Image (cartoon, rainbow, N blue to C red; front, side):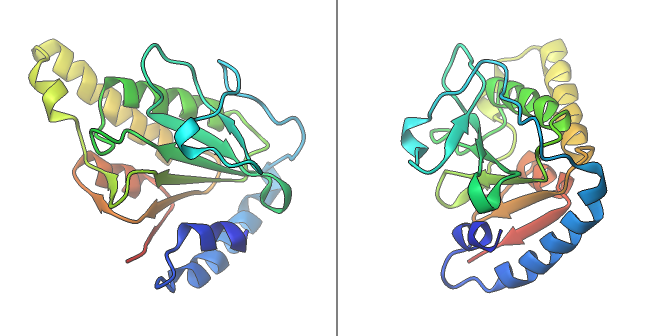
Length: 194
């Protein structure tokens, strides 16, 4: 567990020690509900994300017609039961677009029913950005009814994150604007490193 927190923190960050204590306490509170048997695989199968691949880890993600913008990494060994939701929409700086929100909602549905997951960590793979908020370029091309549906979908996503039965952590190492800040606030804990 501590190894995961050290990986999330940059060398100058001292918050990981406090977070580790909070995380252990949160896990203790949720321990009676969780079961470590029967790890589930996301619908769509397992596949690696080439830009993020590590040999000691298993990567799982949903298949979409377009590129993968949100991925799931399940840690193994000593850190088994920890799931990292990786936001990797590099060109748009993790802006909340249609594909991004769709993939995130599918992941949240899967994680909410997965009893093997003890902790969910939201993390960005885009340097200096946690989440840039709503994708305004996409929204400018929507008509009023499409825009209303999109906003409703965003609210629904934030509610899904807030209602996950496992503890959630937003590992913020960059800016969180608009809907990105809402995403971080939907998590149980937030940690920021300089």
